[in-house]
Image 1 (cartoon, rainbow, N blue to C red):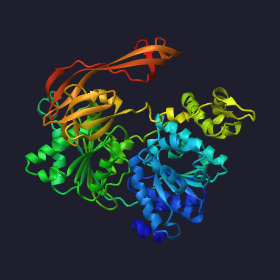
Image 2 (cartoon, one colour):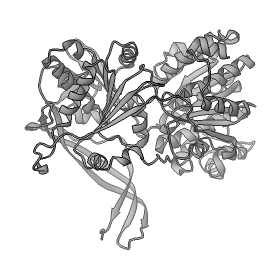
Image 3 (cartoon, rainbow, N blue to C red):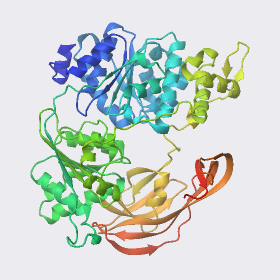
Image 4 (tube, rainbow, N blue to C red):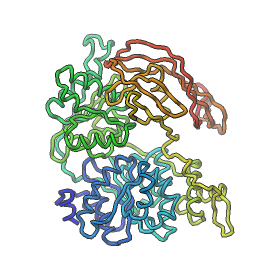
Amino acid sequence: MMDALQYAHGIQQLYSHQASALTHIQRGKHVVVCTSTSSGKSLVYQVPIAHALAQDPNATALCIFPTKALTQDQLSSLCRLLRHHNSIKDAEAYTYDGDTPADERRSIRDRARVLFTNPDMLHQAILPHEEKWRRFLKGLRVVVLDELHVYTGIFGTHTSLILRRLRRLCAALGNELLQFVSCSATISEPKEHLKQLLGMNVGEIEEVGNDGAPCGPKEWILWNPPLIDPHDPSHGRMSAYNEVSQLFRHLLSNGVRTIVFAKVRRTCEIITRKVRDDFVHDGRPDLAHRVHAYRSGYAPSDRRQLEYEMAHGHVMGLIATSALELGVDIGVLDAVILFGVPYSSASMQQQAGRAGRRQKESLVILLGEPFPVDQYYLRNPELVFQPPITKLWIEPSNELILEAHIRCAAFEMPFSHSDSRFFGDAGWTIAQRVCFSDKAGYYQVQDTESPALNIPIRGARQDTYQYIDAMIGQLLEEVEIERVYFEAYEGAVFIHQGVTYICQSVHHDMRVVYLARTQVQYYTRPRDLTDIDPCEVWRMRTLKHKDMYAFYGRVDVIFHVWGYFKVDWRANILDTVDIDAEPFVPRDTELNLTFRGEFR
């Protein structure tokens, strides 16, 4: 195995945390590894996968990643290891996600020894078709759950029940040999969180957290834009966009490979446009062409191309959203600029961890925006370096979500009382209520197609519109319907890779937005209001305060864009425009919590 690691990855010796994790895995434990970015966590699951395949010609492995980009990146890494291991160099590994062509899926089911996928595909395309995946599930030995810290909230709750369904099907096929290996950024109680996700006893899980990877010095700079008037703070501070452009251009001009992390897509595009314009103004168009934006919404092929160009040095700088904070390989970076304080300590660690590798020195600049949270941290810098460790939560006992997955489980295989080991007594009670009993005492559903097809696991169903360059007919992006209403209105400016487009027309019947490429020196910001009307009250509870009540029920939400601001690249408002647009009413109503009473 060590020969294969050396030839595939240049590894001659394991880090202490890698050796510790592999020892626990060899002893049959489930393992969660919680160490820093670029600490070699992927080796912790690659080695047991290769070992399992070499020991048993029928063994298979399942690698679950939260995003499609990560599956592509890790597939190539594992394949290098398999090719250099003589006994399994012909073992086939594939990605299986929404981009997998239909005509390739049958071949993958029949031939794959290792499958890279995401929770969505496991939920809707694999578990509901147990008979087609029986070979794979019977031989399943290693299940990888990467980026554990992502599995929180609604998404984490759904994923926990999907994993229980996986364990249940494997057990029904006589396979009790599943071993889970999970990797995570620093979180609170990782062993407890994995236990909740898997529905197992905490004693079956080992946690590895002592990072043995070498780490070079990392310099931090907390940068607050200067006051407009040093004698009068009430005038505010200089534009953060100007500051980030100057810092970014200074680093790139000195050969420092840098990434800027922005919190939202629009900010990402605005910074890209400004940096390019400023480089051209400085007489450096050569560097302007080596700066790109990277975010969700771009076509998968465009994102893969950007990753390749960054990893191979063709791109010097990226401006990215959190879409890049997960472990996509883009090569070694020298510096990271955080544009604003990230939303969580886990995000800050992931983003800052992008800079530097091994003994190499690196730089992190936290650039504050004018918002109160940012200014609070810049006034109290010790809090930046002692952030509260993120506490994750999931609620697999949530009755509404549990019922949805009990229906899915009963469709996959008739439900019995013995399945309480996976779903608890509450699951058995729900099965008796929502399913029908056959003559043998098993509970089934009458659905002719899997209920999973109508159960989105990342919140509301994400219908998308295509944004098309009207001049050349090129697809620029696919955008969620909830965003379209706030981006595609009369006069709206849309930015893609720093290039400005004017919204030309919107065709809701075809879900297409046509954009006209236009040179303008501003972007638009919608003026909108949201109207929330309670419709039905299903439950009410009196809170501790005598004049306050919580109501649980259905609400109608109406969004209305009635105008927009024209804003220059320094965030100055140039003009205010009124428009007449139809209100947007989401197709799916939401459950909400409302309060009535007075705060005193």
